[in-house]
Image (tube, rainbow, N blue to C red; front, side, top):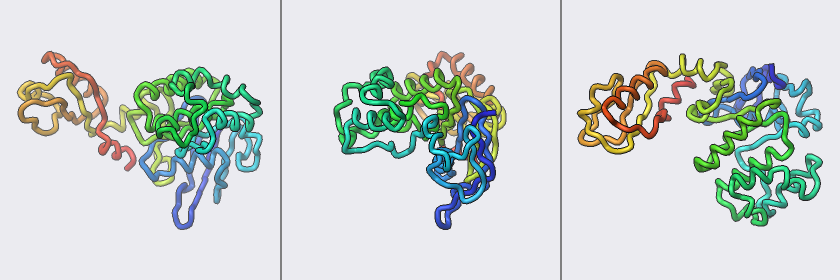
Length: 297
């Protein structure tokens, strides 16, 4: 069992119920909360972090109430969906300011995350004001801010949002390499993001956790009836594709991808094998996002 417990928590904003008697007991290590926009994922993280007081129910982090015990903030960090940086300060001054909140003085804050700053290509921007940065660059700085204190509890709200593939992979690698000894909650609306990791998955809808499973369990039970895109390295004639089981639609002339309806993860491998037997090179397989919504029904 992990170090976080959410028991029967309700949180309202006026007439809107963001969390509805939610129950969550994350396991130690990496946990995902997967749900559509408006499910209450960001509110859940802020309640765990002690930023929002629940209207009812109980939140426990390391056996303590995060809303009542400020000392927990020394071992817990939250990456929010709005960066939580000061636009009028430079990157350096932001990191030094937040470092001091964790008892990290002066330039030590920069040295704590120097390797990550360099890996993300923002070390040379230390003396640039945050307001001048792109959305993706702000996200990189915010992630560095979140890991400054090497927290035991790391709460991540869409950490790879707005990032290019290279930066996203750097952050994913950090999560995988640092998860030992930490409890990490990673919220996202993208199944494709979750599928890159090995962790517990908690599916959230309308302020509640409706199912807790694993990556393999999700593949076994949740993917039934979904559609995937299989993308090709170069256009191919439809005549070479019409034999595929689960093929959706007709592709007159040349096709650069096909849609395949699957009943389980094994159908993806079967489709890939059938395509490769025709000498067709595959460059990618994607879940079609509208079908991902079926997870949350």
